[in-house]
Length: 133
Image (tube, rainbow, N blue to C red):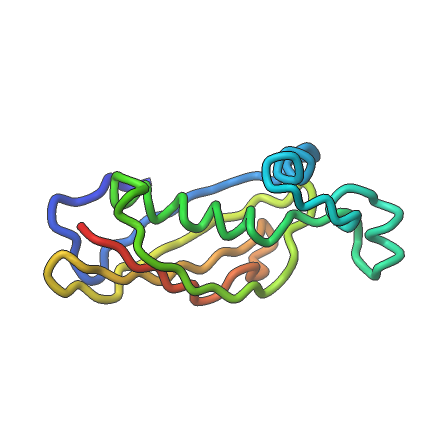
């Protein structure tokens, strides 16, 4: 992970790696109230056509925002997020979030974040995050 530069510039990059251990969907369910059984019950998830339980999408989004706020150095500097999920995250997946600053206009900046699992499969494509320096 790179530290936030004093003055962000187009082309700056940042990364964050997170692992979806078997407890993460449970912890997130408790924190968010999202107790959908596809996140907690392997048999139910398989009956729904999934390989097993999957992580809540908003937890994935939270990890992407975490990567950006670490770059900015302050969660209060995040101003907006647009995201499209590409693939569910399964238990034991290791996700690498890679962000690139794409625009800087004064103190306002925009970054794009993509994320892949350990097999190189995209789980998040072209998330756009906006913030202030």
